[in-house]
Image (cartoon, rainbow, N blue to C red; front, side, top):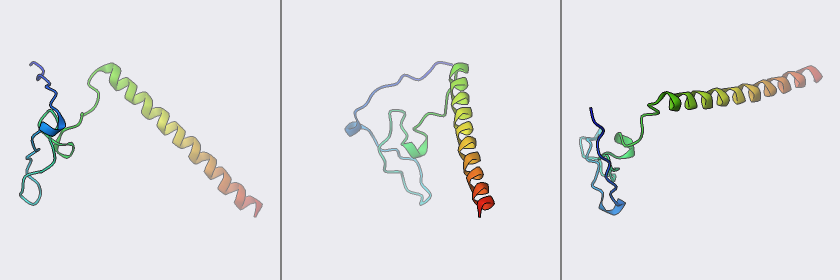
Length: 85
């Protein structure tokens, strides 16, 4: 299975997306080079390589760790305020 050839098309020359909407009309947004707009499949579906997936996993772990740290400090402050009151 070969990859499709990507052709750069200036925004002003792009065609409309044309996907069918809920109102049974065609989407009027400008299409990306793959033929669809951002709402109808124009963006990436995520990393494909093992290295890319590992990078995303590491970023998610760091994000969740930051959130847990921030949340634990806010809980500590709440408990401290209850104890001092």
